[in-house]
Amino acid sequence: MRIGVFCSGGDAPGMNACVRAVVRTARASRHDVIGIRRGYQGLLEEDFHIGTDGSPLMTQRDVSGWGRHGGAFLRSSRSEEFRSAAGQQKTLDILEKHNIDALIPIGGDGTFRGATDLVRQWDGMVIGCPGTIDNDLVGTDCTIGFSTAVQTAVEAVDKIRDTAESHERMFLIEVMGRHSGYIALFTAVAAGAEVVCLPESVGSIAVLVDQLNVMKNRQKDSILLVVSEGDEGGGAEKIQQQLESAGCPFPMQSVILGHLQRGGTPSPEDRILASQLGYWAVVSLEEGHTGAMVGSIAGQRVLTPFAQTSGGKTLPPSLMELIGVMAH
Image (tube, rainbow, N blue to C red; front, side):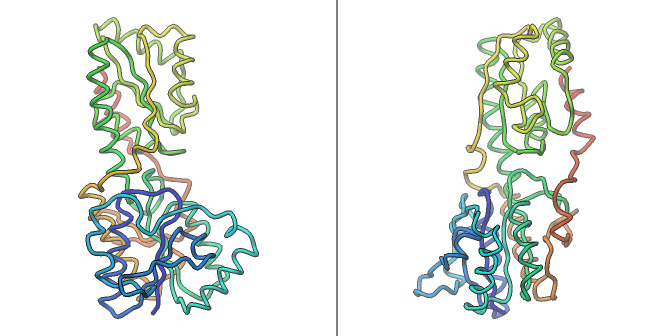
């Protein structure tokens, strides 16, 4: 079997570890692996990873040491061309030209929407690995990159707490996550933030100001409010403006962590998860599976059809309750 592997969409710490696992698992079973650079766009441009021997076929040595590095050595991108009918037909022609039997895309919901389109038209097999810091995919407890993104955010929030206490101020810290509040919730709990604003829960500025007044009366002189970028109230800066207009009792400052959360050395949890998923992806192809994402639930391999992976992952109720209790 000849397997193509690529990263697509936003980069996530652990993607390199996943590629490493795919290559070494496949080679152990004598499958060929073609590393495709820059996702679907790289496939359209036939931009393949060239190994140390000058061949587009990846070997075990080509991925030596990849597991400890962040970013995506195969590079990653989004492709408007692939979304068109002409682009998808061109993709099919290229897959046939290079005798590729199967694909392992590593990415998020946009990546899997593209994979769904491909499965409808192609005789080959496609098994995806969930690589996104947002942790917003149904069918896996965690996605590759989530653990590291939370760790990075918590380290930043801990530093901001020092300044918040020194200046008796409230900081609004915006984290990534798009429409998912996973990063915000886990960061808030781990860093001991008093308040968190999430896309999954509709809040009221007036109620929030009442809560802050209660905290002020309890002699709290510094507050951390973690804001998910997808919150219905807007980002940290917009919420700050609304709080100022509603009479927030604390002086405020907003901080946007942004793409800082995508980079850095992957955590041990992300390295282990990425290695498991890369291994399971190859095993799933060998078993004849296609059109699905491989995930890990309670440490066990789970295959979820691409169409069922987006739009339904809920936050843990126990952590939602915990953040409220810990703020007192």
